[in-house]
Image 1 (tube, rainbow, N blue to C red):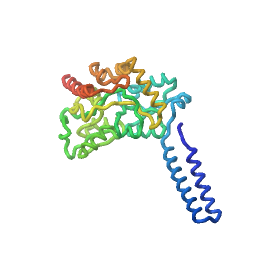
Image 2 (tube, rainbow, N blue to C red):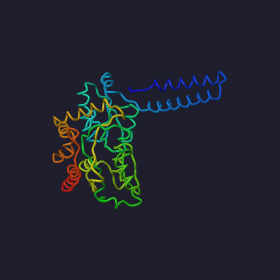
Image 3 (cartoon, rainbow, N blue to C red):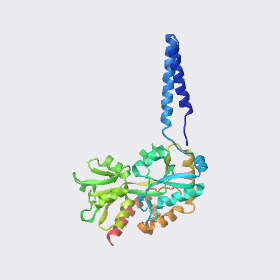
Image 4 (tube, rainbow, N blue to C red):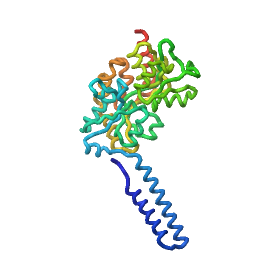
Length: 327
């Protein structure tokens, strides 16, 4: 575990010595001033070091030496991360996680995470990597380090068939929209549509139950998630298949963990040479989204979508919704 104690300890020791010096003998005004300045400097350094100790991580070598890597994934977000009937983790993110463990030569300890605590789990050292459908944003990149992306995504809004929401303007002053705490859907709506009342849940399972129970007029989330829900549950339509801009999903590590970040980037590039994420898609997402969307959703070798591909990501949602409504 990456920790820093030496300077902080030394600074605190300096404070103690200075305090003892001032209390134990008479000193001139200049000596007292110098001593006070020294104490203030030591205190400042100690505070800075204490702050740096709040963020902890294990380097690549430390992970290898331990023989185990801790990877944060969802347990209730099928088909990306979920626990099957046998109690095993499955999904698109987990398929990738299994390969990481294999190529590192270590065992994998999957840690159940919610959207709202993905950053916290990295900053406190509870996990080494987050593979929980983590959308890359500028705000998040200030707190964690993202590796290269492995999937494209946008936001979407789903609602019941008998009251389809096709525009946010249809949402009334007393209506509520369900979101998952800590997701880009929550951030987007709070920033761009603060007038919309949000009903927030920490877990995907809780949000889905609330939506099915009719607790809100709509549910906003990753479009891949709401499209999957509409395909698997009758009576719902993704009326807004693409909200905001097209984004990417990527692994994240603790800020400053360069050895693990560099290894992940090299791994993603190498896996691109064997079309690994297409194989991942075919094993975990094909039944949900079909073969037509594979090349648009999958990112190989960390090469994120350009402008044309980004437009295609948005059209995937429209096509998927149209196909579902024609069934």
